[in-house]
Length: 248
Image (cartoon, rainbow, N blue to C red; front, side, top):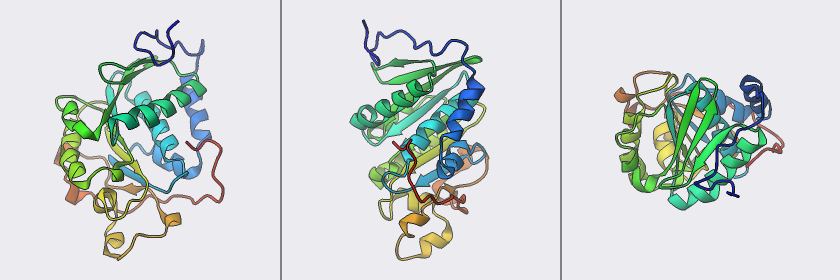
């Protein structure tokens, strides 16, 4: 018997008669307002979520991947972790857990590079799992969305070199978007590229409880964007007094 995640594993058929619209709404209802704002924003082409440990960033990013896969049926997206081992240790474990929790049908392939295929009524969505260690592996791809986890733990020089390449890949699909989630790591990539002008004038970062998603700018032609154009007002995020049970 093939174990889950094995390269030879047959597609997960999911629940018979699964109503995808109902599942998507259930996923939304299970998110707290801060996660929901980030995961359901489909109009901002470049989006960031910066929050502390245990705030539910990974859960929000996973739900966003599924929501974007649903909106881009038949297209390809990509999820990026800082290193190859983190794809296995963080993303694959957490992503499998959510897919199984909501009984979503999918196929996982581990080799030569990990990827998922989510099976939807109007077409399969392919989600590639890649690392910032070698962004050349996404060159030549036509992607609908790219999601970056813990981007501020990556060397800012590497991020600056990779970002234009990533934007250049966003040229297919129904909803094109780049979204990043990260723990605050000082004056690094997210502060430089997704902070508003007021935050960049300060000598220190805003208090942790004020961390919130930053919206770069409304939908536009991604190929025309550069890092110097990504400064706008933040999306308001409702603060939570208690952490929800679904935090990953």
